[in-house]
Image (cartoon, rainbow, N blue to C red; front, side, top):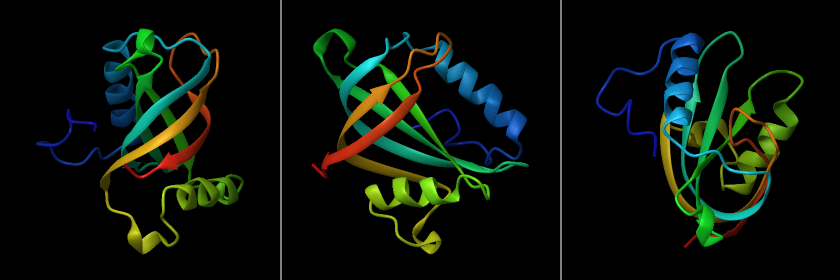
Length: 131
């Protein structure tokens, strides 16, 4: 769960979200490219010129990478909406009215992380179970 913003007003701009994201990413060890088992912990809506949802995963396996964070951005743009809808359906969201500003989850997932040197970016995920 993105706890840094819980007691503060919602992030109002894309730039504020970028700062928050970089701060959070800097506190985490880099996650090497590969496949992992993780829990989807939360999804945060990120407003701006290109609004998005940010999914945060907590790695639980393998043990050598345990508790590292990985992120997947779901863009709300004309080009990306089809893929965003598919990813939202994976986590049980089938209509925009089901989404809250910050939503928590406890879903066991398999994730694939790319080789980005600056962040642990999830390029694909599948939900394995809801507990």
